Image 1 (cartoon, rainbow, N blue to C red):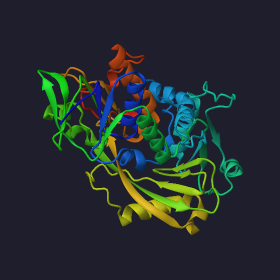
Image 2: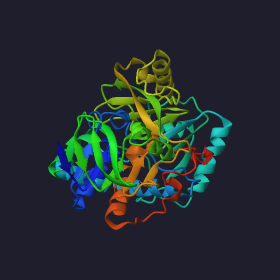
Image 3: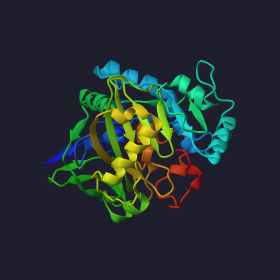
Length: 386
């Protein structure tokens, strides 16, 4: 069996769905090939946090995060209008509970670095609060900290609803979706992509291919692609608690733990970082207990909240913490949009826009060199806070 398309998107997570939709809206015939179910991996498992960049950063990632957050309200509204599904976007803000003198000094440095940044209504993006000031904003918050960093720019979406809206939008735009289908081979004419052959022996011919396969991206196609896109899985465990009413209005963070409140009273408690777990998505007693302990330390009333679910996802990490976005070297008309780690939801709309522009016009509005596929795989410690 053979199928013809203008572009193939390998991977149906949030980046893949957003990219396929953007290409289809630009007039291309698009097919998504997804090894499982669209939106069934890290995109679904994520807590839905839309994070601003570390204010000390002045590079491509900072540019992309700023541009993405600026676009998100209109992006979600357009999906709601097109599909009737509300991704529940809100700019809820974020409180970081600081428990050491070093954390306080770093937070004060963040406030100074962002001193010229304001919200649309003229408030500072970052400000320092005393524990009492933070409790005045969030009465259920613990006072067991030295100070609190308030970020007004942080937002959230409800990941499953965003994915549902993107899926429906793709279907209504006539994007082809082939699920439970793995790519067995990327077909080449010389070094130019010609299509893919799937494990169910279907050939999809296309002159452009975009790899959006998340943690599985390094396993797609020739070994060379894995060397150019050394994406690895980073396991993150999550707990879902249920409260009779929303106990907090903002995202709360302490150390490596965080709480994300939903409109219906659910609270997401996350998340572990396990770069050595491979593709094992099982929950562990150690991981779940740590998350619950962290949650109760931040908001003591959560001690009585029923735990209604636990799960784990595999974030697509890269050696230097930056995503791979753009043309894949050594191959003609092969593109990558992967390795976003914790920023997949945040960067999905802007990544889709970039890939669309590269494919349709051959250029985009950003200098992609620091996120280029095939760049040297060095650890970059400047990625703190992303």
